[in-house]
Amino acid sequence: MCEGMGSCVLEGRADILQNGKHCYGVQKYLLVNYTCVPQKKEVVLCDSERSILSCPSDWLLKINSAFWGREHAEVCPSAKGQEVCPGASETVSKLRSKCNNIPFCPVQAFYKELQNGGENCPNLEKYLIVNYSCRPSPDIGRRGQLGLIPLSVYRNLRLRSRIWSPDDLKKRSKVIGSRDSRKERN
Image (cartoon, rainbow, N blue to C red):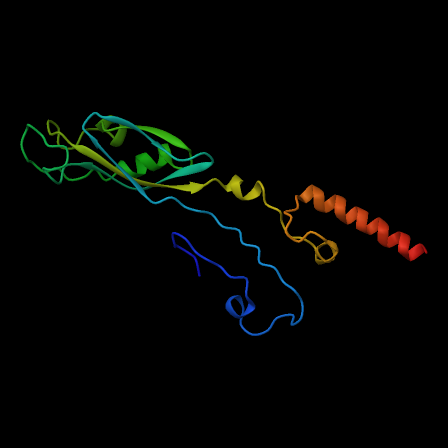
C-alpha cells in the first residue's frame, strides 16, 4: 500500500489489511517497520572541480550513473567552443568501486580519477555528472528492532501503549513465569 510513496496513512483495520476474517474475536495490533529513502541526488562538476558525495548518518552511497565527457554546450560552458566528447565508458564503474557502500566520498572531475589510462578528447573541457542515492546501512535494521513478541507475553501486558525494549520483555516474561509457577504450586 505504501511502497514508493512520500507519505502513507495506515489504519489498523482487518477489512483493509487482510482478506477475510482472521482469528475472529481476538484483539490484534499492527506493527510496521519502515525506512524512508531519500530521493536521488545529482552533482555536476566542471573540469577539475572537486566535491564530496555524502549521505546522512548511517546511510551508504550507491552510484546510479555517471557521465564524464561533453554532450551539451549549456553545461559548464567552455571558452574552447562547443565540441562534443562522448562519455568515458569506465567512469561509472570507477566511481562505484571508489564510492559505493560508504557514507561519503570525495570526487574530482579529472580524467586520472575517472578513466583507465589516457584521456578521451584531450584539450577539451569536459564535465562530470554523477547521479547517486543513499540507502540505509544494513546495521540500521539490527539496531532498535524489537523483534517478535511472544503471544504469551503480549497477553499478560497491562500497558498496551508502552513500547517494550527486548530487555523489558525478558524481565517481564521471567516475572510472569515465576508468578505462574507459584500459582501451580498453590
